[in-house]
Every structure is written in C-alpha cells, then in structure tokens.
Length: 217
Image (cartoon, rainbow, N blue to C red; front, side, top):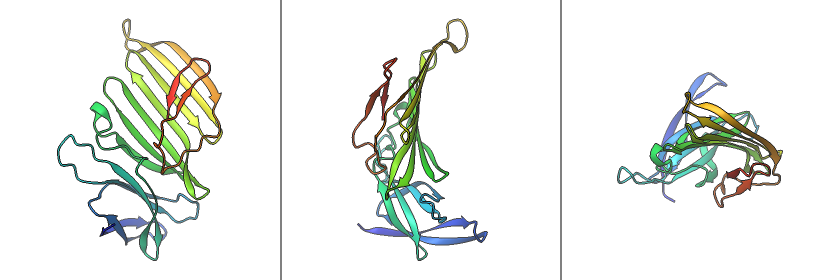
C-alpha cells in the first residue's frame, strides 16, 4: 500500500522535552483522533490513531474508519495492530450523526466510546487489554433507551463473565423523569473471546435469565 509520510509531535514526559517521530500514513487516510499510552506494560507508550479511510465526497456519505496502533522503533512509528471493526463509520450514529466520542488509555486498557440514536439513544464503551499477543475485549458498558420510557444499563466484565443489568422505567406524566420501576439482575456469561481486529465480525446476543433483557455485543 502506498503511504504518505507525516511527522507528529508529542510531549515526552521522560525528558520534559518535545520531539517528533515519523509516521507512515496509508494513502488517502485522514487522522480523526490520536493518543499515546502504554498498552503492553513495557513502560513505552504506543500511538493509537483513528483514521477516516477516505474523504467524504458528500455531506451524508458514511466514511469507514480504521484504528491502527503503532510501536516506536528506532525513532519511527511502526504499525503493530489494526482493526476496521473497532470504530464505527462517520454516519453510523443515526440522527446523532458521528457516533465516535473518543478513546482513553486507563491502567493499560484501551477504552473506546460511541454514542448515537435520535429520541431513542444508545451509547457503549469497549475496553481492550493486550494479552497473548492480541487485544481482547475485557469490558463492555452500554446504555440505551428514551426519556420518559426506560433506560437499560449493562456492565459486562468479560474477564470474569459477570454481567450487571439495570433497567429503570420512567414516568413523566406526574413529574419530570420519575423512576417508578427498577429491574436489577446479575448473572454470568463466560468464555467469550472477542478481539479488537474482529470486534464486529458477528453479532452476539445475550438474554438475561430473569427478566429476559436482550444484550447485543
């Protein structure tokens, strides 16, 4: 693949000085977002970049995105891992338009958040940890619903298999967003292995045993 050469400037806290590293960017790719963080616990920060894979030719065209993780080798950023499934396209947020809201690195875990919908809204955060030479989904948090209807919240620890589900039903007739009913459920779903590279290769449906809430990963 033909690539273009760019130099990105970052702050280096080891010497409190500013330095630049060469970054080879695939042709026609445009940087959407980037950050650095130590993802493999070697005390050296990696570079994580979200790319638009092309320039939109019209206002409402959906542009696919790709996430590429780089390692620093001999003063240059070398491609390490990549995924075309970890980041939603630029128009996959429905009426909310661009669903991508950001990413952070926290305690070695890469967290990526999306948000979308219209009157019915959804949001979810994927959490990836590097192990066994790949990035695995170790946490998933989501919320979906509509004001004055209900909100379904999911907290799924894929490392332990523990899933906590909370559904709050709202009534706005008598007062503003009064919660009149709540369903809490905790159960386990173990041995799910989802990688960064193949995040959305297939849809996974989980149904809670007590209230039959449907969870989609």
